[in-house]
Structure formats: C-alpha cells, structure tokens
Figure 1 (tube, helix red, strand yellow):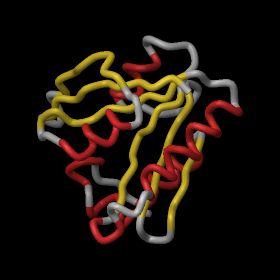
Figure 2 (cartoon, helix red, strand yellow):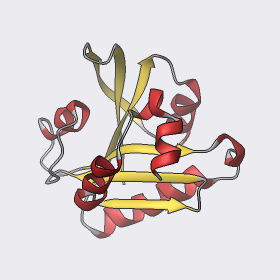
Figure 3 (cartoon, rainbow, N blue to C red):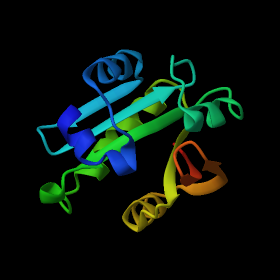
Length: 144
C-alpha cells in the first residue's frame, strides 16, 4: 500500500511507514486489492489532522471521509475503484452513516477523478485553497 500511495504522491501526498500505520490504525475502513488498488477512509471521530478531513468535521456531526483511493495504471478500467467504493458505501450504511465525503484536486487538475465521482453521484459542497500544498480542492459528498 505504501509503494502504491507514494507512486501517486502528487495526487495523494507522500507517506512514510509510520504515518501509514497511524492512518490504518485510526481508519474507519481500509482496503487493498493485491498491489493494484487501495482505499483509506475515516469517520468523524478519527484522530486525523488533514485540513480536508477537518473541513468536513467542522460541518457535519457524522460522516465518512475518503482520504485516499488509488488504482495502479496497469489495473485501471477493471472496476477496482468502483468495488472499493461499493464496499465503503455498504460499511458506512451498516454503521449508520448517511454521507460519504471526499475532495478532488482542482489545481493540479484530476479530470479522471472528477468524472469518476460525478458518475457515482457525488456533488460539490465547497472548495478550498491549500496554500501550504499549492493545491485547490473541491469538496464532494454523496448520500448513502
């Protein structure tokens, strides 16, 4: 999971082993499909300091936040991301959550992620400029 994440650090942010262990330990749901795909999500009570996560925490009492999802280039178009999301939506519903949230980069742009989230029914609920990372993001939500 660490190698897959760090191969896509521009989109996800670089991790070291200790940080990954912390994220996995506090996550609501974490899934890996071989070495091809991975997802980590948190609920509102997570010990997590991401400004994007905190943006949602400041607006919702209960939610599940997708912190990172990645599919290796060789495994794309096989439905792995849809499978990971379907698993997360089911787990969120079972736990009593009604919304799943995430962010997608506007700058640098991520048109594939935009199209994917739109196809799954996510809608924009806000934007932020993350000056410390030279990023602009769109905040998205989907009811489950």
